[in-house]
Amino acid sequence: MEKGYISRAGHARLTAELAHLRHVERPKIVEEVAAAAAQGDRSENAEYIYGKKRMREIDRRMGFLQRRLDALVPMDVDAPRDTDKAYFGAWVTVEDEDAPRTVRILGPDEVDADAGVISYQSPLGRALLGKRPGDEIVVRSPSGQRALCVTDVQYGARNTLRAAGDREKVRPGCIGTSLEGCSAPGCHGCPRWRCSCPSRGAGEGTRRETSASSPSTGSPW
Image (cartoon, rainbow, N blue to C red; front, side):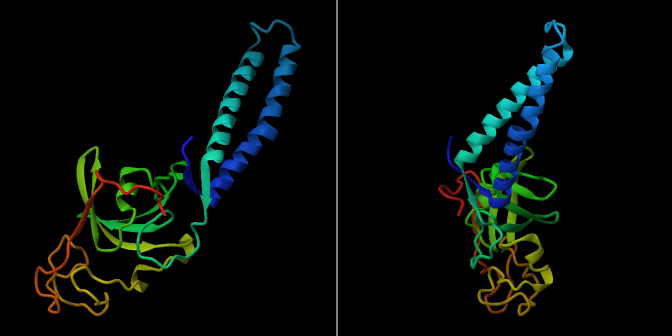
């Protein structure tokens, strides 16, 4: 199985599930199957038939978990990182015409739509790898192509993230000008809009666009 990446917390969850199946669930089912077999005719014994089926399911799941754990490299994703590029473990805020959305890039075994966790192997995850605030990406979705602007990249546990008002970002097209220092109308902090900052001149913002059709390769780090 191809090597992959997972957070330490995700690795611990898979390890705990495997241990529970091996030391709790399977021994319990073995006892139940043995008790059902002792009752006599197994061909019409619903408890025996169900127990054998459940045992096969547990064995398949245990085999899958063991193979996954052997192939996964656990990473410390809650440690702060001194970079504004999005890699494995990053919290990335993207924005389109609707509203901003923050996602976290983790492994395929940790995907959780409700928590905003995406896989680095997904179309959005691949498109975000290596990007920084101000980059625009184009992602193919079932409804068509979507243009998204990366507006923020952070690392660390969720409770350590800075609030939007505490962030100081450089606006694309307003090089060297912090968010608080640029009040020019029309400077929206995204290369999809034209910059009218007097220090740069209207329309001089740099547009950096990447399509998900040419994803980053190699380690998500």
